[in-house]
Length: 197
Length: 271
Image (cartoon, rainbow over all chains, first blue to last red; front, side, top):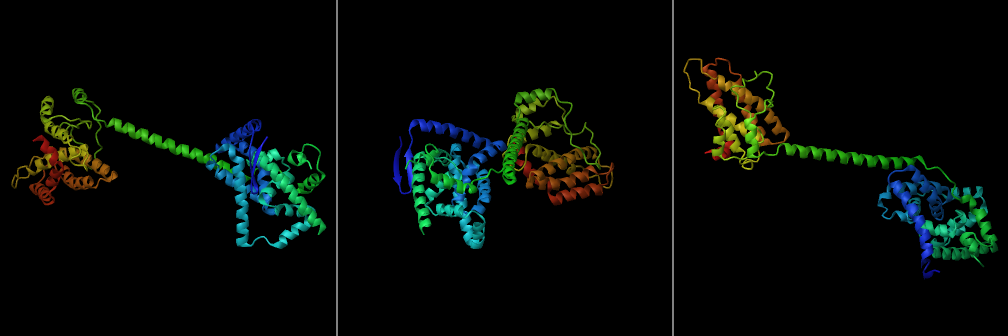
């Protein structure tokens, strides 16, 4: 059904006709929402926000501490509104906002390094309060290669299915499936190693 | 192992994946309302668009106004002008005179030539002007000729050129009044009336030149104004000394020559 090429960690695939048609319907709805947001319609923005907030949340969570995620999600959407006029293809909003989220997370780490704001004490304190197992698992996921950790967070934390992840991020379903499979395999190995140790 | 459950939650559930989902659910995105900062940003975008539209509309209105103004000042054809002469408008606009100046008698005032004058050769002008009064004829004729060369003097617009010519003729007339020795009754009634009319127009034209930042025209009209004022405010029976003082100032300032410089190319067309 899919023709798959492997290029390092990223997997590229081409789709057959029926799957492409199904995606076009979704994309057109997304494009309509983006167009409405361009004209300042608040309802459209609220809908777009509800649709893409889990994606942005997952992408940011895969990169920054949980306590910072909510603020960064707001920041990402603020940047998206300000720069929405630069988005050429309305149907590519998902991929575009995902890119903004990744950049914003990178900025966060850059600034943290410059200002030394987040201390180890704060992070460890939060960890004590929260469920230790869940925190450990999340930590292990965040230690995986970038392509896997993002897909795994979206699947295991945000509860999105593979096709949903593909639709929102603009990746092909085959790429997402491979990333999920390989990522899960790596995660299992690391968790078993931790248990043994 | 079949990873259908991992892919789209179909098939037999994978207990390990289910366990991970349950454990990590606490980190899941909790639905939150759109923050006020985001909403205000959206409102700014909307009002910004309205602001741009308002500015665009204002520019369009200004352009339309400018275009209409240009249409109004468009030169009329000789036939249209001839028709206007035969049926003169009774409501020709007159400039407001200053408060210290008496409104001039219209019978002696130079007729206000319409600003929409097209080119005519001097001969044809002479023929067409025959039915009009003899006093007004030379002034109208020369000013019309002045319009033939609007590019000869780029600082002076046609209306100002016509005004300068009228002022020049008035000052020449005043300068050539016969000196009546010690007797104090030179007849300057006509010059005074003419000067009042020209003074009010001079003020308007000078302000116009000032607004347009036309420095040469502003300077010329500014230097002309004191002489027009002096002549207009002469007493009914001025003494020779008063008249001579004005003449001396005219000579000293060389105002007639200055006016002549500006109207020289125009007059050269007449002769």
